Image (cartoon, rainbow, N blue to C red):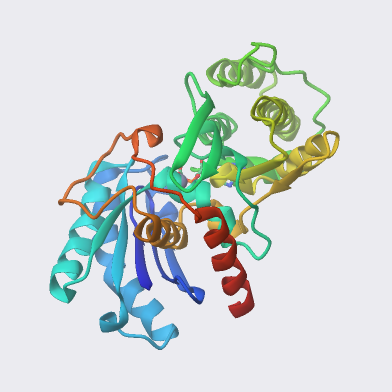
Length: 356
Ligand code: KG4
Ligand code: ZN
């Protein structure tokens, strides 16, 4: 089954083709970052208009590169939520219009489910079950993933998401939106031990996070040390505080879930220091950490096409009416009937890697 995936939840337009036998056949992305940068954040109306301009040309490009045609597509998966309502509506509208024109099923996908399953697109995918650390611009969650559709929230952020904290801190340090990656680059030339920032909720006894206090601590530090030459040290101290908390809670989550596999998903998963800190922490408990390829860490169409293909295969979230869900709790999704799913998933990954 060939699934066309469309991602339009925020500021990246992603389109991909995933074939349930042959794996990922192609994907393309257009980032709106340059367009939003001058406003210091995403402007929802501009985002919607840009998705409208990009989705069909990107679809054409992906089809041409894979030497396929629209008529070859068996189903369309699109991001139904959570995200910006107007941006979601554009992807939803195009997906449904194509579905009607081609008389094929159209399926709304949960954006976070896409992120959670994105490591399965890599050449060395994890087996189920695993614990997922989901760290994106809008979410910071620790989830126990039993199999496709069986998710349990272990921990959540009480305020800012990890990516949001990176972006706000970057802004405080004068870096352009969406500063996460830029802050990380700046931190590389800094001394992480010159300043000591708080590690919020490190010893809270649960798996929840809170990052707004850390942002305030950075603000105070930046006011006390306003020189440009101090910025790299502040960035490095912030990054170290973030990675300390994220890795400590991830290790605790593995212990609570009695699991030896940690999967990292979402844009902040691209952070190099977080990656090495997590790799080091899980080593101490003889566990393994899996990262999606960098291109699949941030928003992309491939994870939506893949999650759609899984849902179409195993059920649990049927093709539905034209709707978007700007706010949508992942745990509220129906679980598919998972009989034999684990074995089938392994077969599917094996056939995918043999075709890669
Ligand atoms: O998953 P994503 O692409 O979009 C959402 O669903 O939110 O995540 C975007 C977030 C942004 O906050 C961005 O600054 C952050 O991921 N990010 C990073 C890095 N690359 C992207 N944060 C820290 N270090 C990075 N290298
Ligand atoms: Zn995302």
